[in-house]
Amino acid sequence: MANKGLTVGVKAPEFELPATNNQKIRLSDFSKQPVIITFLRGTW
Image (cartoon, rainbow, N blue to C red; front, top):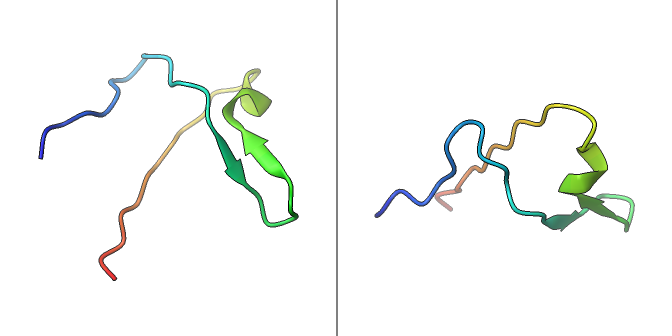
């Protein structure tokens, strides 16, 4: 599998995910602070 990840310091593209309260969370909601994004791939 080719590595298609971003490198440190590269701006991530805007995305949005559902939250547990029926709202949406956007990456831009955290624009005033550092963000660490981790993706976990399940094996189930």
